[in-house]
Image (cartoon, rainbow, N blue to C red):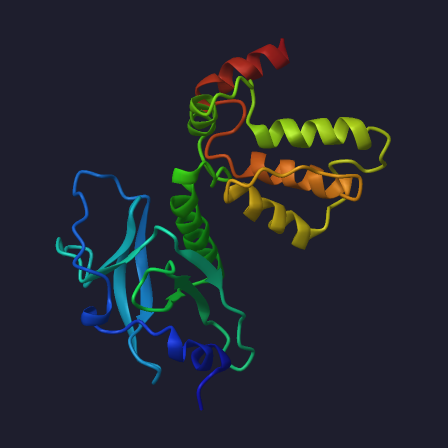
Length: 245
């Protein structure tokens, strides 16, 4: 009997190459954004293929193995979105997510399976970052320099990213007398919703109904996911010497 995820996937199956997008031609000199093993579903009969996936700025490519130079196929990123699928209690250990192509694509969704929950979450973050980066989003997990450069090109004269400024201004206005600020957790679902909105490049404005602990948690999440800490690795020793002095 098919699992609930597989039943939902009848219209989101990874078909043969003839059903995929046009032949892919990745630029060999372009450094991959992420690469690793994933399973792709070929049919609705629990038929999975293990393939080497390579994420680049334009598409998610897959190969027969790590040594292959010609991609078997690809999933274009423009207009696409990626979603985590709910775990099936009857079949633990399946970490499924789907790639939903844009409206102009000739197929529906692609079903993929990672080796672990952590691996799946890393793939989802990386893919979302690649999808939204050209639109000024995907700032979570992005290098601070890249975020500041994009915002400067858009005319911003801020000394910090817009997200940081919005969070800090809101916290200064509503949270300085709040007990447990930066210690008490915010509403996790709302934090993730705000993260997704900022990653999509949406221009959000916090209002009086917004929980200050949620905003504080969002700011902590942004700082935690920076590829390099606020104190750069190159300055870490100097920073410690200043503190000890």
